[in-house]
Image (cartoon, rainbow, N blue to C red; front, side, top):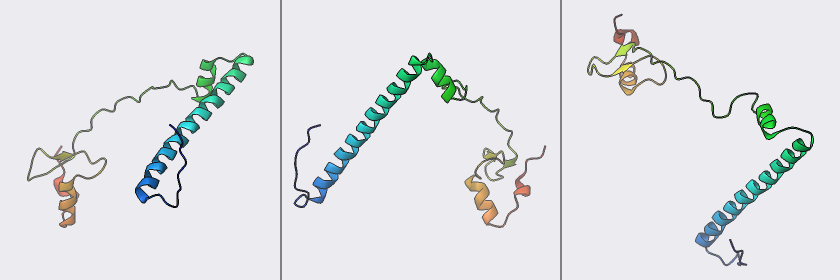
Length: 117
């Protein structure tokens, strides 16, 4: 990206915004470059002390394997059903669906919508 001299006082708002985006991109690239250089210094220092990259990664990840995902949770059986549309159910977890919100706002009780076990 070539840097050209501009008179900021004479530039239009659109020109200044374009330059602002360019400067922000340059700052981000510079930060990544500087961080990469610092990481390489740390890796070189660790290597000079007999530590491998893997040992560093294991230490800083707290022994967790990188990219390991959590186990998928089993679906929870629905506890509430919309009487107007039997296909709409809710397990009672997470955000209330719109039909539950509307019913409660109209003065209804959630226990009225409970599915019989």
